[in-house]
Length: 117
Image (tube, rainbow, N blue to C red; front, side, top):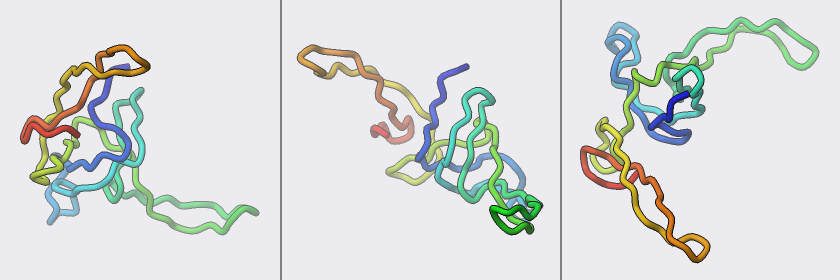
């Protein structure tokens, strides 16, 4: 299982997946709802909406509903908080004091603007 550079709550943009005029999701931005590191997929709000046919149960009515489906992490890119454009993510190691002693802390930053994320 690899370390992923995208986390829950990040704003991401879809960089592949069909032209918008053809019904694709390329260019759409949305918030990450969940991250699945074991399959390298993320669930993005408003992206890759699929139709689910639910059977009626005592807990609730059935019907057709539209929900988001996971998308591969290589198809999305983090949005730079300053320029609102897609950017690559880098890590910088800083020393911070915790509990009375110095510890190394990894900080994510935007390679486009150099700002911390």
